[in-house]
Image 1 (tube, rainbow, N blue to C red):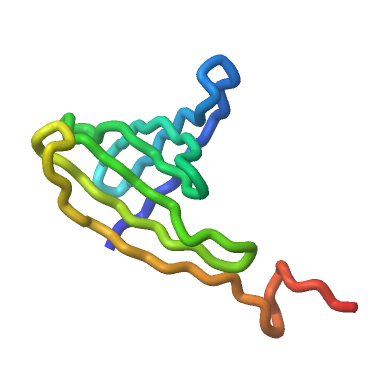
Image 2: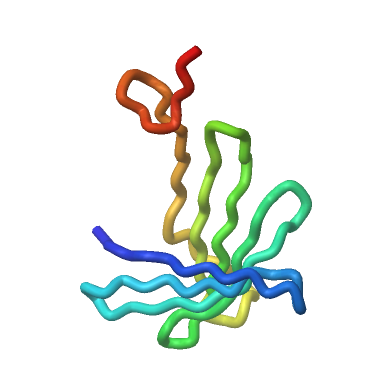
Length: 101
């Protein structure tokens, strides 16, 4: 299990997002740059020990997306899947994002 928070800052000079993700319990930090790649969003960078990271957000619709987290220990020649999540927006009773008409 992990805990974390993300800070994203858009940089119009490079048309990308600077991203810092940290897990304060483990003192783990990852820095990335995020950009669109076709219909997807791909964040690439390194973790605190210098491994290459790639986080991809795909299959995005207004109410769902898929997030894959990968790492490479050989500068991108091969990739190891670390996380694969499918998220869905909750729209039932009690959802803060639902609209009542």
